Image (tube, rainbow, N blue to C red):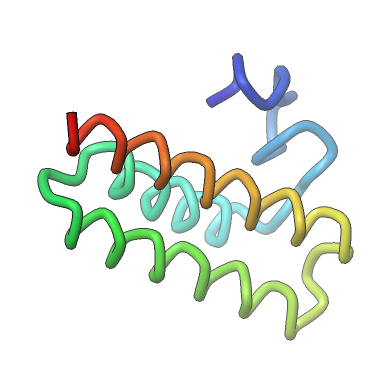
Length: 88
């Protein structure tokens, strides 16, 4: 993930996005579920779970608007990549 989205510093989820350690770890878990999903359905479920967590961050204003958008784009790109792998 760091190669595609830049090199995150310690404590950052993506470059410039810092969140509480508990949230950071949970979001990493959700992203990993996308990356290791074994079926398209499981990938879409994992994507929905990750996006729900980002939605909560957005509602709570835990990260700024631009960070929320970057997180949504990252999750979507990862899911699309995984779906392509599973389909081909």
